[in-house]
Image 1 (cartoon, one colour):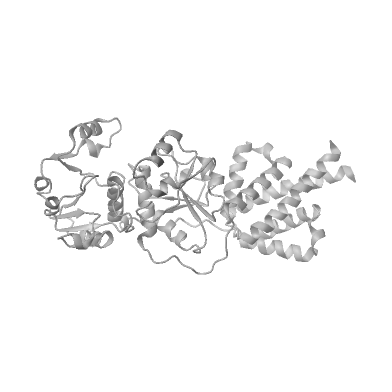
Image 2 (cartoon, chains in turn brown, cyan):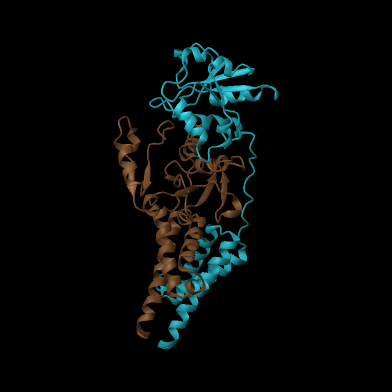
Length: 218
Length: 218
C-alpha cells in the first residue's frame, strides 16, 4: 500500500495478537500504525460511495457483477475525485464471505490461471493497487452526480428489511438471505446521494405506517 | 508465479533450511517442487537470451539501462517466442548485488512512491508477472446486465406511489408532484431487469400489508 501511495488502511476485526504485533513492530509503515479498526464491514465502509469487493471466484458462483481488474480500475477511475472508494479484501484463508460481499457494489478479480485462481493476500493487494496507479493520469474530475455513501445504502437496506419483515415478506424465505438480497440490490441501484435521501424519507413513512397500523389490532 | 502461469523457478544459493521446508510443505505449488537450484547467477541464466534484473534503485545509482516496468515488459514481449527470458530478483533484504546485476542486459523497476521505493519481494514478483501477462488477458467486459423496461419502471412507480399515498406521504406535497418525483427517481435507479422484478415483489407485499391493515379500522 505504502509503495503505491495508498495510505488509508481500515481493518475489520483483525486477529488481535498479530495486528498488535504488526503495528508496533520496529519499522512498521506509518500506515499500519494509523490503520483504523472497525468491528463490522458496514462501519468500515460507511463513508464510502463505492465499495468494491475482491474475489478469486468466477462469475457463475457469484450474485454480483464481476469485473476484471483492468475494467474495474477503469470504473473506479471514473469516480469523481471527491468520492471515497473502498477496496475490500477478505482474509487470507477464506476471502470475503457472502455477507461481506453483500456490502459491495460489485466485485473484481485478478485474471489468473484457471488451475491456480486464488492469490496470496499481500500479492493480490499489491497487484490491484499497482493497476490502480499504473496509468497515473490524474483521476477524472468530471463533475459527476455524487453517489450515496455506504452508510445511506445501509440505512435504506435496514428500513426496507424492517418493512418487509413487518409485511410478512420474510415468511417466503430465510431472513438472512432476504437481508443479503436486499443489501445487494440496494448497492446495485447505485443511488445518487439526493435520491438516497428521498428514498429514505419514503421508506421511513411507509414503515411508520405499517407499524402504526399494527397497534390497534394488538 | 503459479497464478500468472510462470512455472519455471530457478533459485541461486537459497537458504537451505527455508528452501527445503518450503518445497516439501503440504500444498506447495508444483512449481516450487520443480524449482531448479544453481550455485551461481551465471549458471542459472546460462541458457537465456535476455536477462532482466529488478531493482528499487533509481537511475543515477546504476550502471545499467533502467526501464520502468511497463516499458521493460514491452521490450520483453518483443522477443521471439522461442527465446528464454530470465527475470532476476535479489534477496528480500538487499536485492541484487552489483555482481548479480552485471549478468543483466538491463534493469527494470516498478514505479513506486519516492518515500517508499523498496517492495516486498513476493509483491514485486507478483506485480512484475501481472504486468507481463496483463495485455495477453482477454479484456472482455462482463456481458452487461439487461436493464428494466420502461413498463417495469412504471409498474414500480405506480406501486410506490400507491404505498406512499396509503402511508400519508402525500400530505406533505401535492400528489402530482410526488408522483413525478417518484417516476424520475425510479428512472435514475437504472434498474437491472432482475432487480426490477425483485423490487416489484417487495413493494407489492408492502402495499398489500398497508392496505390489509386498513380494513379493520374502517
